[in-house]
Length: 66
Image (cartoon, rainbow, N blue to C red; front, side, top):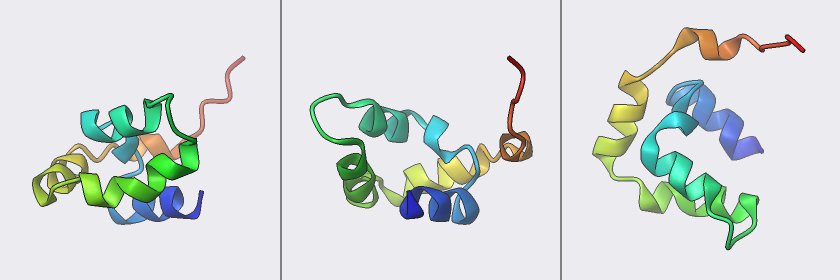
């Protein structure tokens, strides 16, 4: 969870919507925390730039609707 929050601040609050990040986090064959630990090694610098360029400030606002 700590790495996820750090990446939200350093890259973009919606970094997990980048296709490669979403693929790693959605993989069902490994525990969720393992996906986060391996994520930095799987992402190329261009992937991190693309995630940062897709920065969406609205991702900081929680959707509390029922």
